[in-house]
Image (cartoon, rainbow, N blue to C red; front, side, top):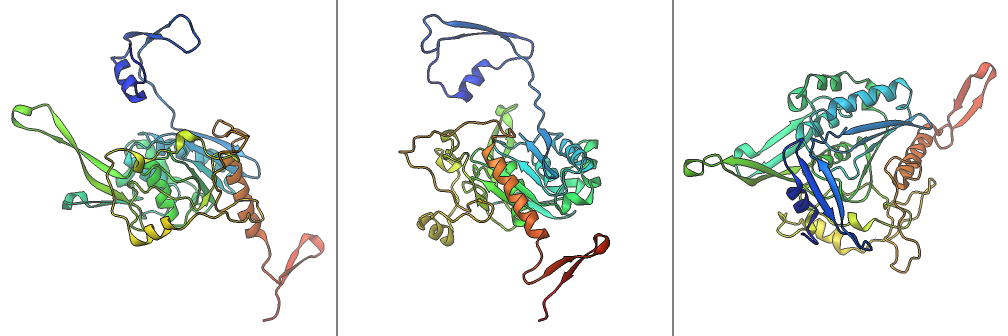
Length: 355
């Protein structure tokens, strides 16, 4: 009988060999008798990439975690969206609630949007072998044969506008992707600050009497291409948008820096100065998007409304779509002082002012 046990500890107790039975007895509040549930353990296979076309020739791709075939699945999704014309005006890459996963998968996803040979992430530690750089080259991301599709993606994947959605549960590999695309100015990061899991663990086998055992040590930290440490800092969005119009979901407000015994990072002077400044609410621009959205008051009558990521009432996704539309309108808008006239036969002529 257990009560108030953390989720991870509960999962450890229930784990076992595949195809073996397990019986759970659950006592719920408001129920007079226990509920018995019989289950059979199995290996859970989760498809890590989902996609769909959006209106106005835009696309949406959600990466739920970085697995062995994530990069190749992303390539398939991008190809499908391109063939349907849904990359022309931009892509929303959704990394919300993505806990991370394999480093090579993160590099492969980044390689889909960055030129070949571009720095994605580096590691730095106390020893020479902990200092490494990872680039958008096949040797740094290709694990399965299907990963070769990344290098064959259409040119539009390197130029189309991108909005990357992140939140407090975007961690590790998802922060590597977001940080790389942000530093190279390849995408606009939108949402809330990410988790801040930027440490590298190494498993070191023990010898002698401790044979068949090992210890896991933190040996390095991850740094974005511009040299920013991800550990306990996370990736700050370019455009901050709360989970809902009413504010954030409370369960996403815990980050690496809030955990006991987390790896601390020396704080730079400019970071301290930023922390000392109170946040101020920015005025919305023409699209209605605010660069900073303040948390709601505790006196607010409305509670944040939960939604499924990618659904029509997904608040942050709708803000990302509005942002892409605004950028597309900017791109197609004539320069100040320029007049555009329609000629016969559908020919358009731009008249520039004399300087």
